[in-house]
Length: 248
Ligand code: PGA
Image: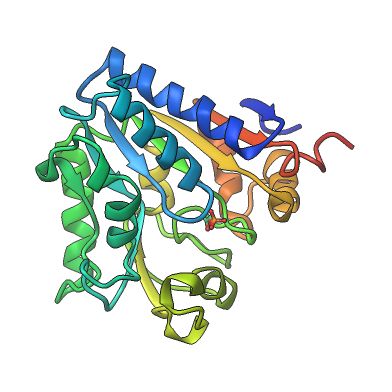
């Protein structure tokens, strides 16, 4: 394997979520002012459920924590029911004691998307950088909205979404891929690699091929997640289905 990082394989997605939630709780215990980078998608749903549960028992305290989400659709306001901000409110923010002042999000309705991306980079810097960045991975190997292609952007930027990415987000837009915004704003690969620690989570059989490439393949812009091979502190958490091609 060309990826020398820690790979942990658990029997099922629920166990992956419990492991990661415990890791987040421990990190917050050690550093209550932790700066977290957070993903959306189906994968982190179980994690957010578990974090909410732990917050309810007092095991986890977000009161001093700061969060930065990875990405947001362009052209819709935060209040749109399909926005990633709405997703985060529904699945995490509305249920834990995060200070709204310390929740950071790209504004998909910003008048000037370029300025918005610069503002976000500056806000991350001013927070002291991201301590722990949690990532999912798209079936096409994207992380955040860094899509496969001939090149990758280093910093937070405006992106055109691939048809498969719009399809996989259709559930947020009445199951209509055409209703999914065609563009988004996303942290760049450099923004992601600047995080002090990265945890990538992949579950389910449909992730097995991109996980195999991530772990055994070369670093290539055709699989943006492969750039994580350059990071010194990456942990990959998998369920058995996502790890299926690693065990062959
Ligand atoms: P998913 O998306 O969790 O819905 O599979 C992951 C991603 O696209 O990053």
